[in-house]
Length: 85
Image 1 (cartoon, rainbow, N blue to C red):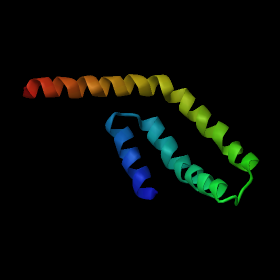
Image 2 (image 1 turned 135 degrees about the vertical axis):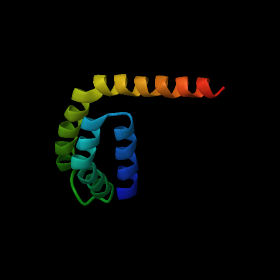
Image 3 (image 1 turned 45 degrees about the vertical axis):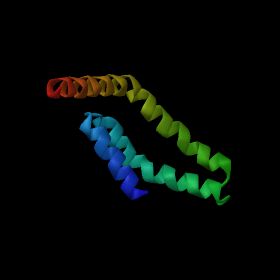
Image 4 (image 1 turned 180 degrees about the vertical axis):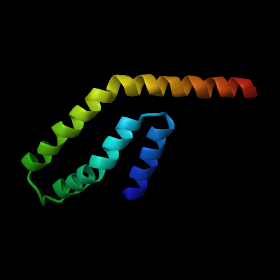
């Protein structure tokens, strides 16, 4: 799990999505653990769903900026590929 979160954080930083990377570092492991606990019936759904709105609202605040950053990254990669050809 930590390896996955580190790789995802690195990918977000690579496209300059710093805020999303910070949110992932702050809440990713807690959310992941909550999902596992929920799947194992070790917490009730209400407890799990207390975490979701917080993380969801943080993502929603960054969604438009993230989309723009992602588009810019792919345009850059596309241009680099065209230069190689």
